[in-house]
Each structure stands twice: as structure tokens, then as C-alpha cells.
Length: 96
Image (cartoon, rainbow, N blue to C red; front, side, top):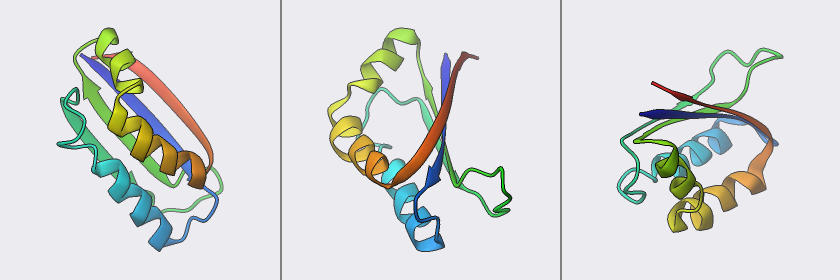
């Protein structure tokens, strides 16, 4: 099993924009069949080093991660929106 984690800093990190982005990320549940689990969180601390949103997904294996990166819904809806609103992002992928 693979865990894929991405943290996003948004250009506009108002609560409204963070919740909108979080809902778009959550919309992958049921629309991206490769997902074995999904968690999305919005930061409440807002420290200087904080990121605004975290996405955590579980996938079967590295092959599923590659397929997820090219999934139609993930690319056309989620990535498209997140690339337009994110100032920066970091990610990590590891086996669990």
C-alpha cells in the first residue's frame, strides 16, 4: 500500500478559499476508483511555516500511484483547480 501526501499553500488562504479547495480535493472520493482512502484537512494554526491544506490518499501500489497521477478526473478537475489556486506545494510518497 502507498500513501501519497501533498501539502498546499494557497495564494488566498482565506477560510472560504481553503474550504472550496478542500471540497474539490474531497470530491475525488467516488470519482477516482483507484483510491483506497482519502483524507483532507485545513490548517487552523496559520503559523509562518504552516501549509493551508493537506491531502492524504492511499493507493494499492506504485503502479496505482502512476495511474492516479494520470486519472481523468484527478487531472481535469482537481489538478486544474489546485494548480490555479496554489502558491506552492510539497509531497511525499511512501509504502505503508
